[in-house]
Amino acid sequence: MPEEGILAFKNARIITPMRVIDNGVLIVRQGKIFDVGPEDKVKISQEGEVIDVAGRYLAPGFIDIHLHGGGGADAMDATEEAMERISAVHAKGGTTSLVLTTLTAPMKKITEAVKVIESVKGKRLPGAEVLGAHIEGPYFSMEQRGAQNPKFLKEPEPEEYMKLLNESDCILRVSAAPELRGGLELGRELKRRKILASIGHTNATYQDILAAIEAGYTHVTHIYSGMSGVRRVNGYRISGVIESTLLLDELTTEIIADGHHLPPSLMRLVVKAKGLDKVSLVTDATRAAGLGPGRYSVGGLETIVEDEVTEGFEISTEKGNYVVKLLTREAFAGSAALMNRCVRNMVRLVGLSIQDAVKMASINPAKLIGVDEKKGSLTKGKDADLVVFDEQVNIMMTVVGGRVVYKREKLG
Image (cartoon, rainbow, N blue to C red):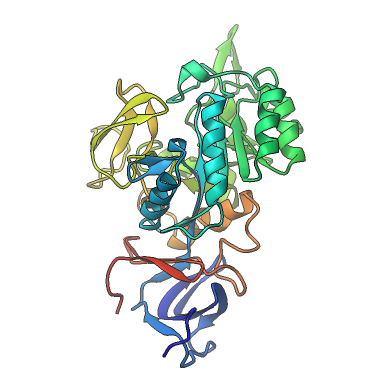
């Protein structure tokens, strides 16, 4: 009988941050990567199960640090069943770790969601592992609210956010508009707690961003979405958050690469300006992810999901690449994408190598939330979070902690 907990992947094109190893072998023991390398350097023992990848890619599992839901469930549903459903559907897209994201709502609702996220953190779930929570709102600019519910937008109040931060150990990042009264104080508190302070849904100027960086903000939430650009004041041009993000080396950022939020030209610009190490891919997925067209609710706002193809715009026209908008169609409302679609778009639409696209969905986000010592790359000793996919980035198998949580078909 094969020894339980041992897997050997062979005939793989193994993606590491430095190279692609053809005819590679990777050994998993007790949920960790035991060995990895070319087939002539790594011995496959008689123990455990041998999986023939048949020349497909073997990559580190994707890490999504900004998603709200999927499979009809949302983090704000605040139930373990919802978290399990989100975990399962995103594993089908190659995601092995995720940071569940709340949205603008009454603080009581946000607190309830965070408590449930904390209860499932690190637990064995049907699919991707939940690493923690991302608090997106309610401390946002009204002018740049996007699909955040305007009823509940407010300025940061220490007595409110300190209670939330003190009661939870699972909060990994917070997105806020630093120009709001109290925004810089919030940034300093997040920095003190080593929580990723992210600039989001903001109408800030360049000077505001400089102050934000000094206060501890280091990341920018979904670039181009919910943020200011160049504007004119008394005839003078004032730089906004977009230009500040592209210019300042102190800031990292993320792209919603669903094929709708940003055209290829802007995604290329972000990568060119920031470099491959400072850009991560996120889905910003809603409860519609993994489902088809229809109407859904996001934070009390009605949204519509449709298979939109618009002539004259640089968007993905791939069948089934659904777009999510407010019912009025005046703004996007998250996405319906799984992470493999984002990786595929960076290759097909932007022109990145598969290695670089995977890097933006694995080791880059791992570094942002401080889990890169155990996740994000296929390195000896790290968690055996793996994904197998073909040339079109169709997911064949997803492995979380050495456990197969999704398998599309026979690999051999």
